Image (cartoon, rainbow, N blue to C red; front, side, top):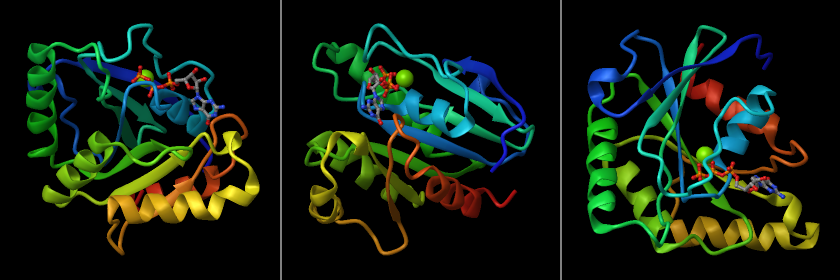
Length: 195
Ligand code: GTP
Ligand code: MG
C-alpha cells in the first residue's frame, strides 16, 4: 500500500464533529500506551503524524486522519490507565458508545494489544464490546520485536485463546519498531475498506 497523503482531519470531542463524508474508516483501539499512535505512524510512514500523548489516559478525543483522500483512520482514546477518575471513565464510555454504536462509516477496528502479555480484562472487554456491535476486529499484537522468535507461536496462540477470537477475525503479529507485519496489516485493512 502506497500512502501518498495523510493528514489530521479533526480531533472530535463529540459526534457533531465527526467528518461526515461517506468514506470508509478503521478505528484503532487499545489500552493507553500500548502503541496505537506508533502503529498508525508506521503504517503510513510518518514519524509523528499521530500525536502521542504525554498524559496517558487523558486523551478525550477521537482523532480522524485521512489517508490518500480515500479512507479514515480513527485513533481512539486508550483505556486501562489506572489514574483515571470515575467521571473520566464514564465520559470515555459515553464517547465509545456514541461512536461504535452508530458510526456507519466504520468498517472494522484494529484492536492493538501487547504481544508480550496476556490480554488484560479491559482488552477482553473491548474485544467483546466490539463483537457486540458486530464490528469486525483485527487484533494487532504489537511490540513483536520485544519477544524471542521462539516465543511467538505460544504467545499468539495464548492471545487467540484468551480473547476467544472468532474465526472471521485476524490476528496479526506486528512491530512498529521493525515494520514487521505491516504488509499483512495493510492487506487485512484493505479487505475491510474495499478502496
Ligand atoms: P496513548 O495515546 O497514550 O494511549 O498511547 P499509544 O497507544 O498511542 O502508544 P504510543 O504509540 O504512544 O507508544 C507508547 C510507547 O511504546 C512509546 O514509547 C513507543 O515508542 C513504544 N512502542 C510502540 N510500539 C512499539 C513496538 O512495536 N516496539 C517497541 N519496541 N516499542 C513500541
Ligand atoms: Mg496515542
